Image (tube, rainbow, N blue to C red):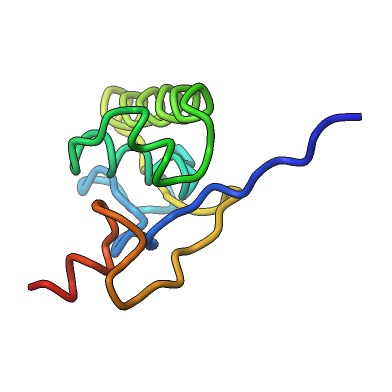
Length: 116
């Protein structure tokens, strides 16, 4: 019997969840779907400059899990850019951060809002 999947800890949903070419109506565009947890690895590693180990701790998963999620997310970003497809961020197996005060850690989006 397989072990149940651990929900990935995510500090917040993206402010915008649709990205793509401006020269085609949305109904004519092909979609690439990125999950919220894939987005979170891109945000933490590429935007917040976390290591994969730090990202794993923040998301409460193993480093090897982060490595796999991050690899999938980068492939999806590349596909959207190279093939000119709409990128949609939604779904996945995640749990949102509930700590609005000081946040849940260094890369927490709630913490940034409280400091600024």
